[in-house]
Image 1: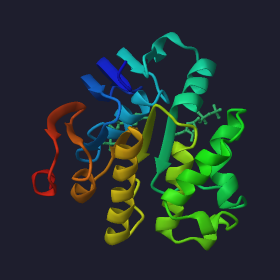
Image 2 (image 1 turned 30 degrees about the vertical axis):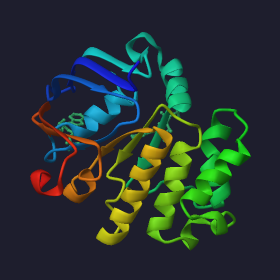
Image 3 (image 1 turned 90 degrees about the vertical axis):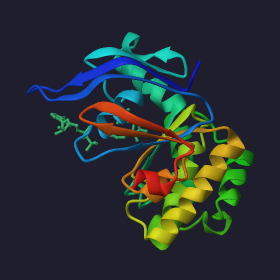
Length: 229
Ligand code: ADP
Ligand code: ADP
């Protein structure tokens, strides 16, 4: 099964806004997909439906082969915890916890014991081995986002959703973090869906979608920054 499959998905919010209009989309495993488009074009709604945070008004969504329309809210939350990771613009690390405790939180929330070797591998790979005992406020923005990336990957999710992951970073740090994320995607065969406004960020993805008015209006394989700007 693909990591994500959307089939004729539409989403109409209360009040009548049609945020998604008949979107069909398959994201193969191992793909780093960027979702672009102007504000209000439906990017967040697409991400929330694809991540099982919200349910479409019409059509179906399958995550790792599991159709979420068939699941109740409790099972959907379980599916997310088991198979989906998230990276946010604002990092969303817990300030009172060490880096070590932050990155293993998804496992502990899911009632699973952290695989120490895997955690160590990821932490070393992103260059945070010396920072495990630090609190998030003692890290730079780039380091906090590296910790958030480890947290997103720690449970070996089928797919990671990243919502403007570099929106709070300066351009150089942003592109360093994205190069790292792309290298991790390639090394692990990880699937990542990233919403971004930054053509330089999208250019680091394997594939980019451009949305407008709730529809996918363009798809680019191996996008370059120039054609996305
Ligand atoms: P983007 O992420 O591209 O900015 P969104 O998915 O947030 O786009 O929004 C798409 C459309 O849906 C917009 O017109 C927005 O105002 C509307 N919308 C988003 N969320 C809601 C909501 N909870 N209730 C009503 N309308 C919404
Ligand atoms: P619960 O119902 O157990 O409180 P949540 O739905 O709050 O679970 O969160 C489950 C997962 O979804 C968590 O990993 C959380 O980080 C993520 N999540 C919750 N809300 C959002 C959101 N608005 N956007 C992106 N991810 C979210």
